[in-house]
Length: 204
Image 1 (cartoon, rainbow, N blue to C red):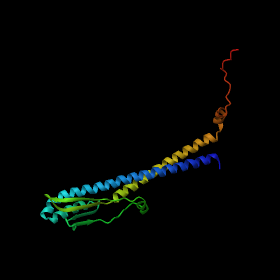
Image 2: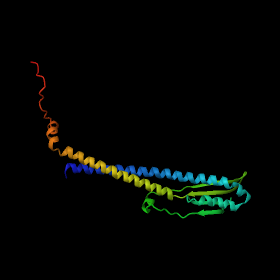
Image 3: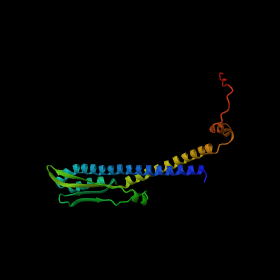
Image 4: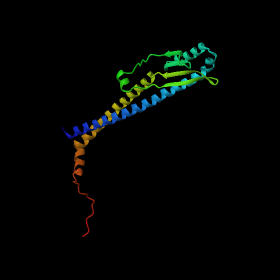
């Protein structure tokens, strides 16, 4: 195997190692960010809904509580929205099946997203009237994680191709000199410097 091929293989291996490390670090950072967003989203919704229905829970107006819960759940951003009494019995129970469209199953298995549950107490004055339980749907977050990963992979392929082409071109110039470049540069590389006509004569 020639030296140029060995160097090309070395550059390729280094690029693959750099990409693998960068890819996993980027995916892990994005996944951690999305999980924190899912947790914050669920908790904020639970707190907001708990404050909104507190008056109606105190009055026993279950119809209004149900309609307000449905208005939030029907947006499609939530996997679970449940209104419970203080004994834990569900008064309003809304659940959405976990379907992840546009994301390969193998990617979901390799990079799962946890979906923490947000909880809030529904107060009626100084008395606890019930609980709100909310869980965000991970479908949108998984799709965003997948799209970001594809974008990273695409940019790596483009960058790797450019680096390889530049590397091959540079190696050809260095290892396979020819023509005028060889005539002018090779004597300098081996220490054969031409005499200078303007060099002053030494004093004797």
